[in-house]
Length: 499
Figure 1 (cartoon, one colour):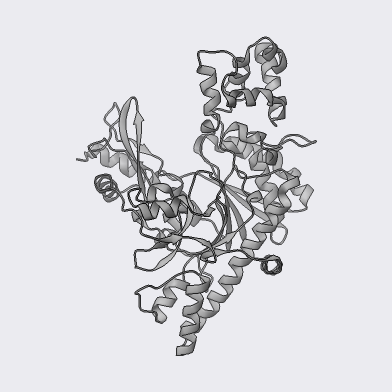
Figure 2 (tube, rainbow, N blue to C red; figure 1 turned 180 degrees about the vertical axis):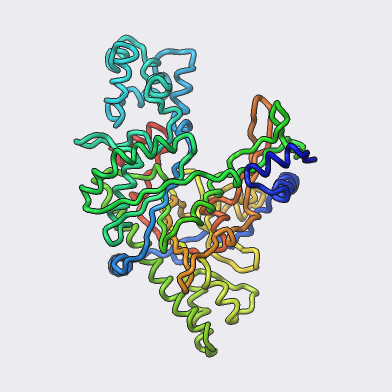
């Protein structure tokens, strides 16, 4: 099936023939649905700390930072923001010229509220000879939208979200990239230095670097810290081969294999190369202006305090297991693993070997918010490959829609995952874990796409905060809805939280 030419193409990407064979087999067999125990809820997998507990966790985090540990803020920022502007692309291509849908009317009625208004007005004057108000007055709404989207204007249809102007300030509008630098100064700086890492696409790398070079010194001076800002790209070796509907390799017009990015799960490789004791993970678009940051900062410190408190206890227990633990100690450790780390042994034998395996692995604390109907994954108690039950973040595609009980769990789940994680990635002896060792490879998924008008199947790797972290110790903490402010469409920037 694979020619010599194919094998050369594969080798150039750093992929093995065996990996391709495995991927093609996965197209044939598909991926198994996950076996669920229950949707996580407060009191059943989700911790809701009271005010006194929150203060203790913030102090635990401040003490940890004071010890000079290396903390990194990791921001997945790859990909263009084109989906954010789907409605406005449709308007530019529509067979009508004035705002007609509710979305279009809202966009133009409130256009002056956008942080990019002044920049858009300037490019309209440059390209059309008139500003936004004049163009709208004469009914030329499409020129305004086109100047926002197209390369000769702001090029927002192709730029990454991290480079769009999101929030207005007296000193000038800020991008999400800048907001993440500010956040990093508030909760992730240790010994006067904040380490921030962005994963970016190759096409946008130089643009990101230039913007950081332009902005970072100003923030460093303002907040009295130093920044260490680094970047990485998704590795070609994590791309996956595309398949035809009959599961044979999809080929380009020149006969070469088509490879596609493996989804955000590919970033486990990037995460694995970060030198850190603790890593915060937060999506690029989930940022707020400074006036709303105190709540976000407090809760980041809370979940980090939960993490380092549990890690400290886990490390103490691992040292006990290094010796000759008594039956009473085994029982105490078993209770910690089941109650505090939410890992139920089910039919597994609970002995020193089992407890060591469950304690000596990466740990993450995930903020979860009350479900308000946003699309995305949720927190569940799920069966693992070894028969244990633990907490996982699941996507809808991982759940058998024909199982009425599971669908009820999914639709009636009380909480949602906003991608708000803090991770501990070293063992009790200070050695970094090899994170790919903890991926559940059976949790990828297959989607239908097209290329050049031809249908194809695409394979996504286990998601970064889904199956890629399946074998981590996971703890869920309820955080306020105010800490979750994603921007999925351009009109989301008109929400009060982004004004």
